[in-house]
Amino acid sequence: MKPTTLYQGGAPATFSQIGQGVAEGIGRIGELYGAGISSIGKSISQGIDAVSEYKQITDSANALKKAVKSLPDDDYGSKSFMMEFLDNPEISDAQKVRMGSGIMEGAIRNMFDIRKIQETNRGRLDLQGMRGAQGGASQTQPVTFTEMSLH
Figure 1 (cartoon, helix red, strand yellow):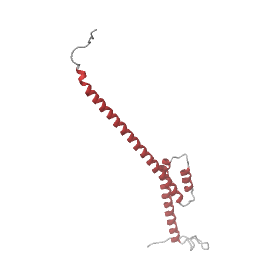
Figure 2 (tube, one colour; figure 1 turned 30 degrees about the horizontal axis):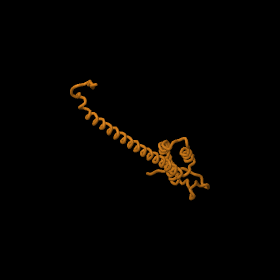
Figure 3 (cartoon, helix red, strand yellow; figure 1 turned 180 degrees about the horizontal axis):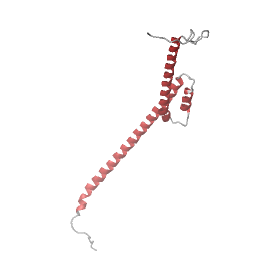
Figure 4 (spheres, helix red, strand yellow; figure 1 turned 90 degrees about the vertical axis):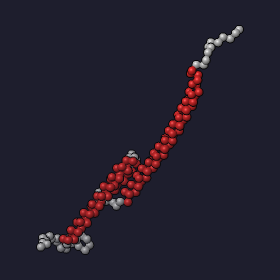
């Protein structure tokens, strides 16, 4: 029996492009592989950044707590209020840093303002002769106010 050929003639034009298709496929595989490696590197970098940011926030929250502990006690309960806020486990360190630094700044500003007022009042009392040698008003002499003229 003689074999029969179904196709007789030259190779189709598409056969001549097989090599080009294989080369393009291999190139695309390399491109996808490179993109995958790049994505892995980017994810690792983002993870390192997140850990670094978390550590920085935690360190800032701890520093804020130490700063509040170093404040003097006052009659208004500011220090105890801030410590309750900073010790609250339901508040994240990021929230403590954001809100706590503002509270701390305000508390320190208020302390300085109160001290300034106290010093101003202390100076006024000295000018008016209301403070005795021990820093308090004289117990033996009544306080009198006199009009002073600078002319």
